[in-house]
Image 1 (tube, rainbow, N blue to C red):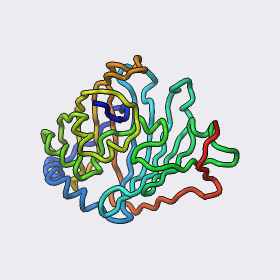
Image 2: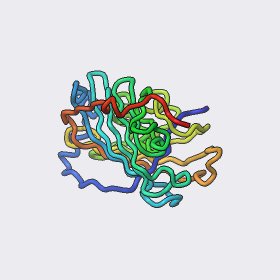
Image 3: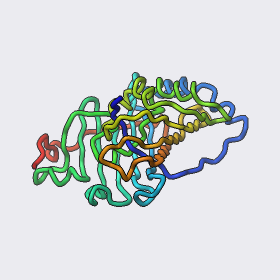
Image 4: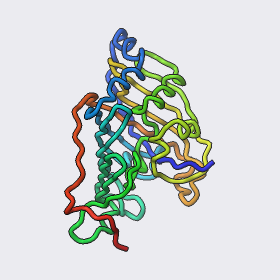
Length: 259
């Protein structure tokens, strides 16, 4: 089956352990805790630390930071920045990148794209996908615990120990249930990969860290990445933060790219 997925990896980070009783309370109902956060104007911040296991590039390969804004039904906007720690694709992706998404519109800036923008323009406007637009976004978290349906699946499949859930899930299953996954533009390949994950929740039951691991297969024209273990670690902080995400100034935006 052909799937559109992102290739990601993460440096190992440790969270301080919770007291036993706090850990017990934290994991009771993560899905209800998440749904309570889906309020207009509220949001959460996240960070990704990315690297291949096998050191194709220097570790970490990519670092991303972002903020996600919620509405009553889920994610309505995001502002994500990414930068490569080492050159990739002939060294053209070391420049920082940024993507702003509001509803069905997206604005992209930096990275390789900067070479194709008309003089005086710093942003390119296009249609939005949740987790796409720049090369660094290929290396973002492909599983989103910010979606109630996806979080419910992780909790259901995971073996619970205190404030963590550990389990496995097939990419095919993630594709079926997750709008974030389906609307992520990455590398197209046929794969039957299975994701191993560890989800940690905080004292309120909200996701605080998600680590995913899978083995890259059938990457076509990227043989150096074949059979490499890919680990993604994402941290979520600032739940309930008031979030304001605005489009760039119109004077800096273009809808056309130069050859």
